[in-house]
Image (cartoon, rainbow, N blue to C red; front, side, top):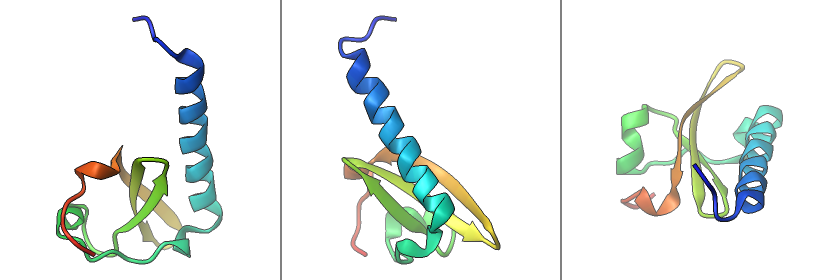
Length: 79
């Protein structure tokens, strides 16, 4: 597979990893969302944004569970 912009892809990946590391340090920074499309991930769902991506996660004790990383435009419904 050949990428048109491999450096852009690497930088985008690094940004997502940095956002995940931020959740490791302070997972409570984002409020609990009451969004219909996020309910499939359970209760207490939170969303961290990185550019146009959304990191969907929950917190259980001292563990952060990342349920999915997807384009933010795919999330429907209101908070």
